[in-house]
Image 1 (spheres, helix red, strand yellow):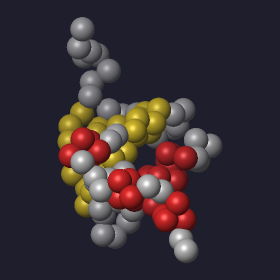
Image 2 (cartoon, helix red, strand yellow):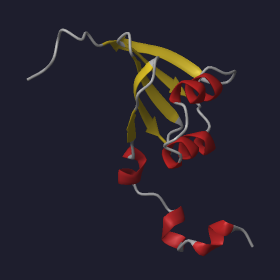
Image 3 (spheres, rainbow, N blue to C red):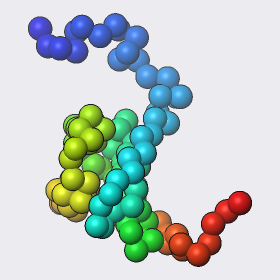
Image 4 (cartoon, helix red, strand yellow):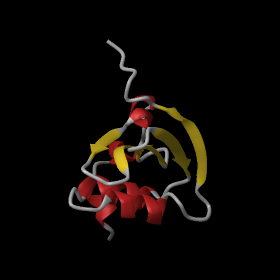
Length: 103
């Protein structure tokens, strides 16, 4: 039997609160300042070093769990391979100015 069978049955039934799971990954990257991944929704939000913020939908959930588990992975390569590919939708969310911060 598959590995899934080792989890309790209630793991497979999701409550509404589980749908809001989000993981923030900060990194030292030449292109990416911050990556927010939403594994259950198949979404990733990327804040680039230039301040642009993009949201990607239909991202592979397997890839999202992989980047959460592997902190040695290059986030730039991960974004290029998993977010900038066919089938993934991209939307510009905004721009965060380095001169404007909320108190």
